[in-house]
Amino acid sequence: MSALSDLSSSEHSSFFMDDGNVLSSESGIDNHYSSDQGLSAESGTENDQELFTSDAPEEKVQDDEIAIDLPASTEFIHLDPNMTFGQIKKSLEKTVNNIGQLKFYDENEKPLNDKSAAWSHRGRKIYGRFVKETFTLRVQDLEKIFVFEETNPNQKVKDIKQQVQTSENIQLNVFTFRGKALHDDDGLIDKGIHHEGDTLVSRIEVTILDQLCDSIEQIACHEHWELKNLISNYCQTQRRENHENIQITFEGNVLETLNESLFSHHIGQGADLHYKVLPYTVKILDSEEVAQKPEGESLEIEDHWTVQEVINEYSRQTAKPFMAGDKVMLQDHILDHAIPVWRLRIGKNSELMIEREVQMKALPYLCSDCGSTVQLKAQDAIQCRSCFSKILYKKRTTRACQYNCR
Image (cartoon, rainbow, N blue to C red):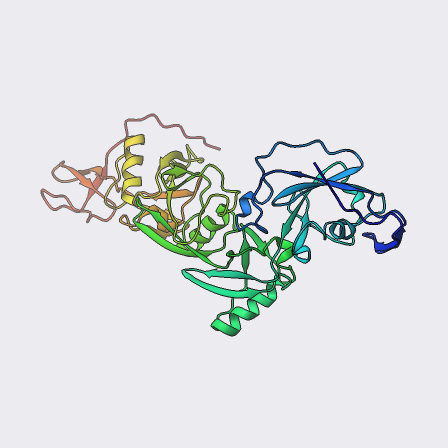
């Protein structure tokens, strides 16, 4: 351990709390000491994933202290109830270079204001990182990447949009950073965007392939979209039903949830997704059986089938042949047998109607002259086929008949 210089206990300081009230302290900072952790002495880090991590053993923080994790050491500061983060920073001036670039963050990577009281963080560790006055910012839109050097971290997102429009003549309306959407009034530094090579992503292009339906579509989207929003956009573009029972495969892995963002699934620019609709059930209403079975016949089909394949499966399941004059109808429209089901936007529990051709029965008649039996249909000429007599008698029925006379 090595003792570091303190603020004078007699020094009077004024500062602001979070609510804007001016408070004063006669004591300032009592003392602080450092614990060398053997970390890199470089100011800041370009690796965001390692920003708040350390392999060094944790030291216990006293209830009236605050631990400040710096790139090269950990400083333990004895707190006064009225002390601000700005005063803590001032106490480190003699031991830390580039104090003006030092920024404090809590464990959630949220910046801590210099005027805020530090007492609420007593007994805890905060993180001190050196933020350059300017940094190199990258902006990605589809396959294009724009590089803006000397970017001020105090700029807002709307300033970057204006800068892109001015320099590249491109209007970008949406930016995301690490999978989260940014608003125009968001400050870069407030969102942790101040490191070399940080990238704001506008649009990305994702290709969705349905091999069974021989379909491919490229969709421009954003990293913060949930996967279900991408699929909905794809179905609207393809004019197909947005099914619930689907399977999405990315890089050989089936994506289990549709409610996570594309960024969470590591889906970025140029990604290929494989789309598949699992088998689902439709209702088939047959005009010959609609009176006996009004609810229809449940039939499991697949989205890539043609209407003819649906007919074949129905005939196999019900053992009822489909005749040449029969028609398949959807919402009063006669369907072409060669059209794929997915193009008809048929979904789960959709109803298809089979209109059967009316088969005319031939009835037996007796000729009044020669006594021959003549088979006649409704549209046939009334004439004996043997003697050409035009007087025919209908045969007496053999079934029992009952008549109610009043």
